[in-house]
Image (cartoon, rainbow, N blue to C red; front, side, top):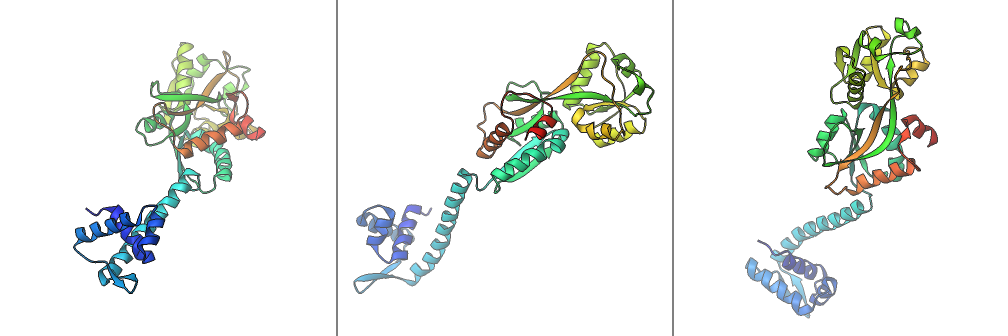
Length: 310
């Protein structure tokens, strides 16, 4: 196997055509350079230099090797520059995960601010249920995700970020739309279009029904929030979604909502990452931007407060 120190000594001598200049460049003594080149020639069983007057010049074998070595050490210089760029966040990628709701309503805002501060960093955003994102963390597919806490694991650190209200939604023409309050008992008698198992919204609503000793009449489950809204607007049933996901539909009166009789239901959004895995520089930078955009006490009451204040 080639000794790279010996190859480097050869390269510096060949580039400068001087053992003395090569020694200064490598910060070692001239005899050390001479020894390295000699050992390299002995290993190769080739001669790379010959005397020319008071100096030296390359043999034909030396010229051929120098061209190859020049390419190798140019790659080394590129790697050194890349290391510096990675260290100073001028190069790299941020691989982050989020639930579909946060990906649509929060992440564009956060990604814009992140990109403004670190324009050279490539952003890779994956969407999925909170449970899917937790599994990706545990499989080391992602470093950081924004999700609900749906996976009780000692390996995951959850930092509270915001609290999102979950509200019942129904068609404006639905018989229950005229009610002043909506009980879970009355909800349980209606066909319910529910978020998929594994989503934070689903977990909170299932728990709420259970605490009210009601069994929901689920006729369809889906991860597609827009599909849920369309079905509800057409009168096929009622549903429960994060308020931010339906606020424009409520304003346009495509959907209606009635306050729950018992209490408000909130979904806690968390920044999650593995406890025993050090965060990479890009993930650390994302947390820094997140902290800058959300000064003061957390959790915030809703994504919209973050968007309005910043």
